[in-house]
Image 1 (tube, rainbow, N blue to C red):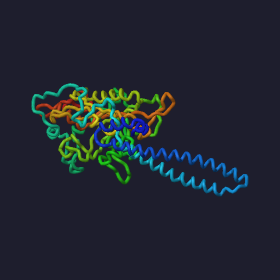
Image 2: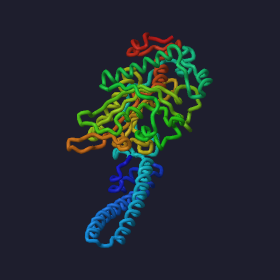
Image 3: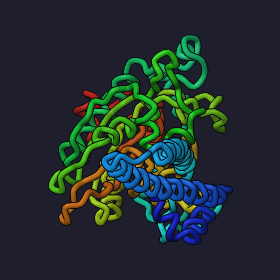
Image 4: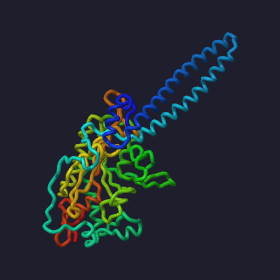
Length: 423
């Protein structure tokens, strides 16, 4: 959530940065400012009336002490009381409406973010390795999995519908090996604290990380309990410290969590196609950092490098792109996407999105720290996938496939999987 003072004092800048995102979100700025003006006017008038009531109440006491008639003045005080009640309702209504409008406003892209309309305008920042040369026609992960008995789409669809899968046999063992490999990498080498988070959260947790109200249609809701299935571990992990004031020496907080993730993916292209590229349920290891404002962009670079390290250890070619203003997520101010090469798809697949949210999420969840000046300040929050499993699974199978259809696993996975090959 944006700071209302920023909007009030830098209106043109805020509008320009919002316009760079595309869409019409900048049009809400004037409505927010008008609501803010009405709220502040009501609060100012309230202070005046409360002062008047206090002064007149003292006058009534003095007059009664002198035996004077106070009925007219008492009527005036009652009138002031009625006006105070009305203004309280008006101020409260303006405050609620202002918050509703602010929750609908996206974050401001970083001043250095590349300006563009959509994903086609995202510049490549760097690449690691090069596409593998198999020496034979690449099979897709679907063909490889069918031969090796790793995935069962048909039986999963019979139980749950399309865009679900059952990992079977060595497929399930490989999925588990990848999860453990990713968690151990981040906790043992990069200093993240592992969290086993709840899979159901209250609406206010999703408001805190900005999935609500914007992305309601993408979420699975348990209506009877008013709880939501996680779209990502970002939600419970970032909310761990909501409504808290952290000590300066507690920062940075670095957390890693594995969870299944659940997304309706309403209207998403490719959702009905067979394979692991887009699923309603998928596994992911998430990285979250809660940091001081002055270090957050430096920490974004390190968090992105931590996610990249997993792909480097697995020997998978990837590239890093920076999202332009027209493609960046609702709550982010700066984002890097990591895309891994999948030979069987002949395409790059996004396996991680690493973002700095500034104080946007922290304001929504009232997450603060006490600075050296003794004042409370909003933290900055970051997160990134370290990584999402389905597309990593795809890239791994398709990169390490052999001419006979078997899979030669990269060395770091041997101990986790318990073998060097599948098939």
